[in-house]
Every structure is written in structure tokens, then in C-alpha cells.
Length: 334
Ligand SMILES: [Zn+2]
Image 1 (tube, rainbow, N blue to C red):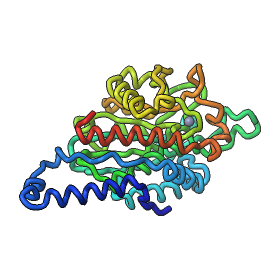
Image 2 (cartoon, helix red, strand yellow; image 1 turned 180 degrees about the vertical axis):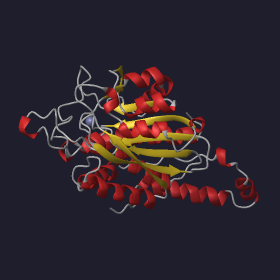
Image 3 (cartoon, protein in one colour; image 1 turned 180 degrees about the horizontal axis):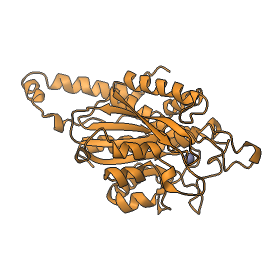
Image 4 (spheres, rainbow, N blue to C red; image 1 turned 135 degrees about the horizontal axis):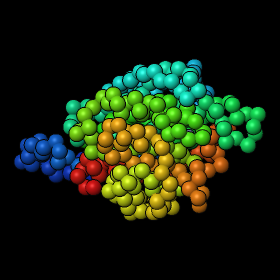
């Protein structure tokens, strides 16, 4: 798709910029040039939920994206090309892994880097593979078929692609690394945490950057469904409590408290767990737990996880809060 910024606020901002530029002409001009890079404040752009939704639909157009499958390969080529078109330096980190069912996988963690030489960085993550079976589907005859994963996989990637697009259009001094982890969802339904997150386990043991350079990480998983509720995930509260509380408070100040629920839910073994365990930086997980008992919702690991359950408003709530976090961190206002 083609992106045009038709947001009227953007034009008002442009006018203000022009106006202030005129005002500053003359003696102030040279002063302006001396402003150190780290003091540059950049206005938080507006997150476009429809654009994020279109990025999800595009992923689904390749079919299911089970690691090593044909849809997976085609989707990878598109993801890499799209990040490059958004000005990122892209690393394709290939790895092999063996699943608990003894299947050999050829996986790729896709890493998109902004300001790769800057030492102060944020890590943003999501998984881009989809589950090879629908073990929670009520129709038992279809449980061995792979899911489309609009929400479970697709939504986190869709939000991060939109953030990448905006980082390219509204650059910030801070460094950002977006990692799309592979082979997250091939895990055993009966538990065994290490059967999940095969890509994040590989990355966390073979990172492309130094842990000292990373402030913290934010993982997005299942962030697109209608009526989503993001309670504070257990491992995030335990190991990234300061950042989790900060972001949930920011969400409240942005009137998004109906999505970002001020309650601690259960702990989830997700990619952030392995990043914390093996790489050793705090990483929180924004993940949908919509039911009172902190379940994952009716569409989870079923064939209902398709475009019908994706809601632009949910994508916008998550995207705008994460975007505000990034820009406020870069502006030293957070
Ligand atoms: Zn899943």
C-alpha cells in the first residue's frame, strides 16, 4: 500500500514549524545548529491503525506462515523488503532448531535497526511465525491444520511495521531495534516452556548487540483483537516492573485504561521470557488476556484467528501507547 500523511494536525504542525523557522531566522539560526543531538525533541506521530491492519492482511495473503513453509518464505521476503523501504538496516539471522515433535526447522529472526550506531536503544519484538496446528479449535477434525494467525503473530508484526514506517518519517536520536522472532509458536500444548520461543532462545544466546546498550524491551503478542484487555503480565511485573507500571500509567493518561487494565494477570512463557533469561535485559509483554480468569480468548489457537477478529481501535490503542513510550524515552520525558 501507499502511505500519504493526510492528517490535518500534521499540516498544522508543518505550518507551526515554518512559522518558528521564520521567527528564528537571523541570529538564532546559528545557535539552532549547535543544539546537541541528544537534546532534539521530536513530536510523537499519530499511529495509523488502518495501516497496521493492512500490514496484517498482507501477511495473511501469503497464507499460514509456519516456520520453513512456503508462505513463511514468501512473507519473509516481503517483511525484509518492507523494513528496507522504511529505511531500516536489516539483519536476517538464520538458525536451525528442532521442535518437540522432532521436526527440523529453518528459521530466521528478522532484525530492523534504526540508528544502529547509537548506544542508547530500545528493543521492540513480536513473533512472525504462526502456529502449525489449531489445538484449541472446537472442530476436532481441523485441529491438525495450521492457523492463519491474524492476531497470534500477525498483529504484533503489523503494529511494529507501522511503527517502523513512522520512525522513518519522524526520526529520533535514540536507537531502536525491532526483532521479529521466528518459531515462537511450535510449542507443546501441554506445557514445556522451552518448546516455545525457539527463535528468541537462539537470538538471546546469539544477540546482534550488547546488553549494556539496551534500556529495556517491549514485546507485542496478540495485540489486535476486538475487545482486547492487556492486564500486566506476570513475568513483566516481576522483572520489568518499573517499565510496566510506567507504560500502564502512560496508557491511563492517554485514556486507554479500558485496554491497559491495571491488574496483574498470569505469567506467560513468551519471547520476552527467553530474552530476560538468556540475554538479561528487562522486557515486558503486552498480551491480550480478555477473560476474567486471564484466558487468551475464544479465537486463540483456533481457525477463528483470522481478519474478522482484528479491530483497528485495538491496534491504535497499543500502537499509540508504544509509540508515545518510544518518543518520550528519546525526548527524555519518560
Ligand atoms: Zn500462540
